[in-house]
Amino acid sequence: MHRRLLRFAVAASIGVAAIATFMQRTPRAAAQPPPQGTPASPGRAVYDAHCVECHGREGKGDGPAARTLVPQPRDFTIGRYKIRSTETGSLPTDADLVRSVKVGLPGSAMPGWDGILPEHEIVAVVQYIKSLSPRFAAELPEPVAPTTPVPASAESAARGATVYATLQCGKCHGDDGRGTGATATGFTDDWGAPMAAANLTEPWTFRGGPGAADVYMRFRAGISGTPMPSYKGTASDRDMWDLANYVASLRRKPVWEMTADEVRAFYGAQEAESLANPVKRGEYLVNILACPLCHSPADAERRTMPGMRLAGGLRMQLSPFGVYPTGNLTSDKETGLGNWTDEEIKRAITKGILRDGTRMLPFPMDWASFSTLPASDIDAIVAYLRTVPPVRNAVPRLTRTALPQYLWGKFQMLFLGADIPSFFFGGNAGSAGGQR
Image (cartoon, rainbow, N blue to C red; front, side, top):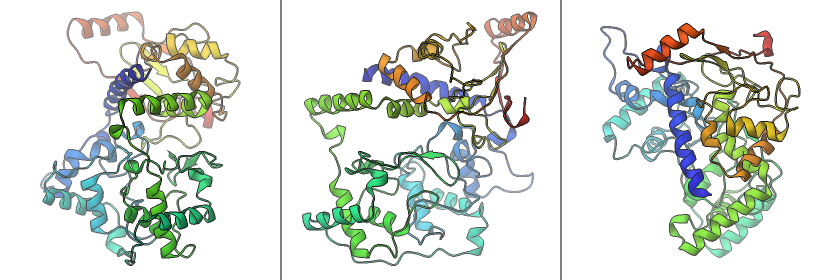
């Protein structure tokens, strides 16, 4: 099962990369040279070479690949950063930004550039990133005052467990740190992007680092733009250090440290958990397979339009085949999947046949690859889509290219080797908001 999912994930990743390439259709999607006669700063040159694909030419977090990523890339123009060693609401220090560039942000698409870029280029690009927000010219960072760490020990972890209960951390992170028993399970950040509470048993995924000192700083500084607050004034420094030591004690053994028998048992437990909670598994699959990328209309900044996630209406011109508005996957009974049967949804996902018998192209909806998923995963996707809140958005039917134009396009592709571009258009092609 897991090998098949891995092969499918690779194929899906290739498809997502192709979609991101298609989306580079406007001048804003690629790095642009400065006006003639204006020398590019060293930091701008580094940014243009390595950062625009995700963060966008103007640093707004709207690069061509942005809509494929969860979490989404940072908008540098706002000057709000999650991973900092400064007070809530304060700017990060230069050292904070350099660390994020060097080490990366584990569990996200932001890689570590240490060893790839030389030190002077990392420092230069940080200075350029700061220039994108007026806050850095008007404010100074307010570093958190250093405190004396509490050494890790069984006693400290035990006290931390009490702090964990007192601060009601389990409401988001679960009684065991991995979500079991959590009452709050769906989150969005201040930018409207979906996010999940951290799995505290997997510290290698912590954005700010896995050590107790790193975890303490998240408690002390908070994570701006997310539901994770600062506990300054709510818990003492000692409480926060004990809590950090408790979180460190929750670390499970990672797969790369397991024996073969432990790996089999681990993945067996994961599969059993997926079968027991198909909606959670389906949500994971829908996100990792980038379904919202195509099935959510985007604005001019290539960000999903508010309240329209999975509501369809993204218009794609797939040359030479025609214009294909994406379908509404919400549970709306008139314009979405609310009145579809499970079998009709599965047939569309795995065979490319819509409810009315229309056949889909095998791209960008890669139904041929979906057909290789285990039946339990297809069932999970359907179970999750049933829970997506209804959005009334009637999407028009596809428009096929006239036969002579289609044949000429195919001839260009097959015999002349022409690379005919495809386009993704901003806005909603559906009825919501009076757009049609």
